[in-house]
Length: 188
Image (cartoon, rainbow, N blue to C red; front, side, top):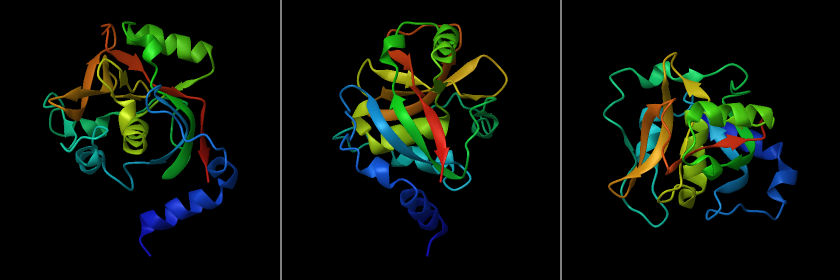
């Protein structure tokens, strides 16, 4: 059997109650009760992004040209957001559209005060993979849990009718860019 399939089946065996919640999530509100996240250890970001599609879309996802060669591997989870396993569950994910127009630094402070965690790049990719409609016009989101030690904050948005992984400065607000978050991460 394929190693990734083994990991996914192991996670599914440990989450029978989640499969029976009856809440499939709602793409229009940008919320998902749970997401299966696979880290770059099993599915490299550079290979995963082109698999993304918008809801009803056909164009593959792209990585913004402003990620210089080798830059993506430098964007790693910040303290307290490390993945608990190579594949795991992310609970109560939200694209954070209430933070559209907010400065990312301020949104991160608010999330911390609420006991929520920002999403990593891999978690954002999982969100759009499972719920393509979660990425919508004027309802895109930053991924504040992946950083590289400077002021850049990764984000997913729409460009030329396709998902795009890019970054914005932590001090700049964007009216169309929220801050995605979740309640917690759960290992199998």
